[in-house]
Length: 396
Image 1: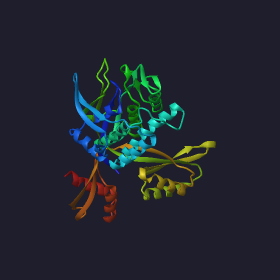
Image 2: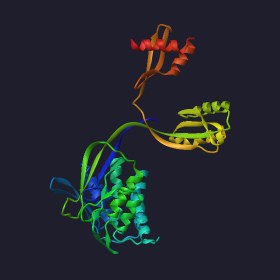
Image 3: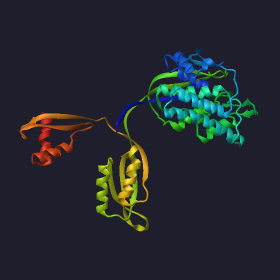
Image 4: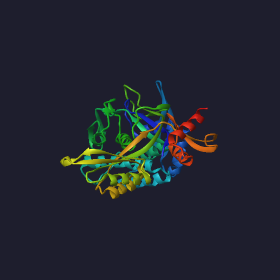
């Protein structure tokens, strides 16, 4: 199936002053014209109005920069690991997050917990700075906004981690602190120094890591909007901002898979029969060609193009028809030129009657051979004669 669509791309640039959960949310909200209303809808949906937690977005100007600053009024009630996990599940369902964005929610938290476990060498994690409702808001509101923007691809710039030391519950630690450093290393995130102080928080880094894992990257886009989010810290040498760009990537794509297997004990008759039957059950294309295999045995490589959802069915059929013990699978995107089909109905004097046939219009115009063949049989002519006749009528 061909799908023509505009992929929504988010370009994330934390190279000036790093990233935190509230900075990312602030910048995402700046991409909306009705950011205050969206924040109210989120707060009402998750019943924040019934708690001591208040969310407010305010405009901030610094030098030439104009953007959002998120305020979270919170008693900072401590939550356990399981309580935060349960809250994320609960709010994800309340917000009706699609499977991809719900998975993104869960992954951010899993990355943070895995980082804590790795650093402290224990399965019993005790959260300090991360163990509050702020973490729940950072994760779920981020996913909610990404879903509303319909983000499908991302573009990432290096993360400014900061320099020097940071005060934590474990005392003074070098920047980036161990949990952040573990996430950076495991997910191979590109970083740079940035300002003095901790510029990128563990939550901000986990947000980037989860995006990198779940969303494909894009190197270009047509940018239609910019969002700026401010952080609460003040740096002497730069504004504390995170810049996002939002845009489109237009293309026509088809997701396909290539199924391959090597065969060294099969006859041409069996291969020919397998090709016909694989095409009959829906394979997009089937080909095979001679190869030399182990022990210098001559054999064949069978290659079958299928749609993604056909992988299992057609792999089993390949094994049944050829006796092979396994099938390799490669997943690919096809870039296909735009095409359309038009049906012509006209009177053809050579046939002395009105006929209908389809013409495929793309990079080249071509009459469907299926129709040519049927007309050739019907009028006892060769396919070449029928094609010449119909082409003449199309050119008139």
